[in-house]
Image 1: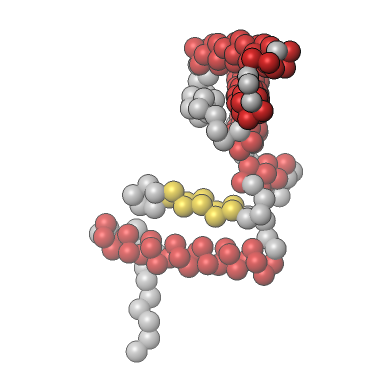
Image 2: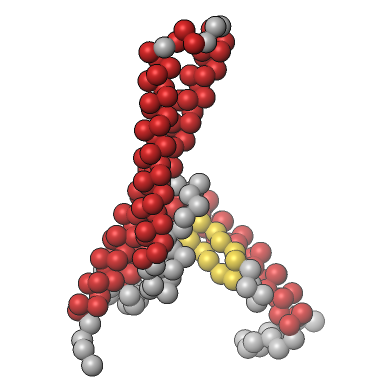
Length: 203
């Protein structure tokens, strides 16, 4: 007996739809992996289950680099991309986030709907100011420590205090660098939105 031909239309029953998705998802990911391994194909595969769960397959190149490569292709060989300038800025922000994953401030929270929060930008600037003040304080402590090592009685005490101060300074520097990068992303995004407003036709 031959296989029953499946009609290409939406499965109404939710349970059956989830079962069909699970089966075909595995096959799709397997084929994508085979293309990547056998043919050295650069690809990004993004899809969501019927319940909204994200599934992602990307290759040796970061996802934002693959998307950028697609956007950089001349328009004729590919589909027209709406809001292309917005997408390019989004790719830049993805690159920044991948470089600084430890950041707690995410500029893309309001970026997706085209709204950039001035309050959040001010918050980042305040955080940078705090980092600068903390860095100055730690550097002052480290300088005092190097000039007055006699306040500690043993070599172990000296090495321990030096290690603590240097680690603290490194953490603050890293935090400051991350915040500055995100602040640059906000400034660039605000500039992009301002440009969009200026070139939009009135009424």
